[in-house]
Image 1 (spheres, helix red, strand yellow):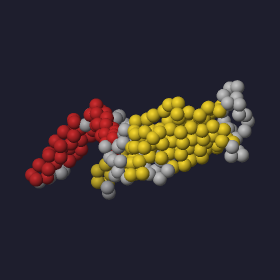
Image 2 (cartoon, helix red, strand yellow):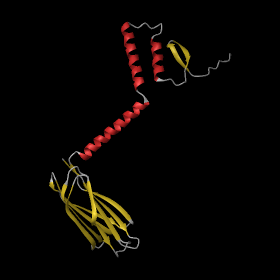
Image 3 (cartoon, helix red, strand yellow):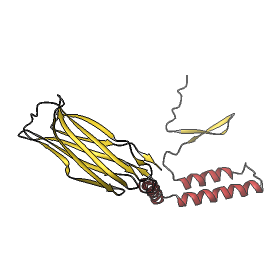
Image 4 (cartoon, helix red, strand yellow):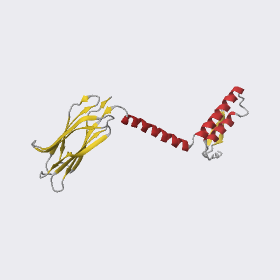
Length: 225
């Protein structure tokens, strides 16, 4: 029995399907323009006799592909990506700054003193695109038995769009209270919308004391248009 010849390398079947031939595959990477040129040469073989219309269409497609391959460069891809990112940011900014809406929040920060006691700091944000009036915040700090240890009241004031406010009237300091117990912070927010009039009072209750530092954001109901 004759020893079979070993064929090394990578090959591709080409030619007539009933009588194919092996053609060595070129493993080197080629550019898009080189591949287009190769395809054009294959289409223009002697055994292929296209009509004038087919030749014209093939030439137009070839020129168009060359034009696209020339124009699509890495630099232009990066520029297009930056442009799309800027467009998305502009759409977000338009919604944030222009679309009429009420968006009011209260940030509450709770801290335990190193030698005992508690501190509560609050900040009111008007993230909306229109002003609000008669903004009032009432906050109280009480223990598990319901005894109020300290409280504060803030307002009424008016706030322009995209503004925030904090201050002494939005702070509560409790001295002498144990740091080993659980406590509660109750926050009430009341304001008037420039489009909807008085808004129902928002009330939140936060349990604190388990950690030495806590931060909470209290979001009022959003009103659009």
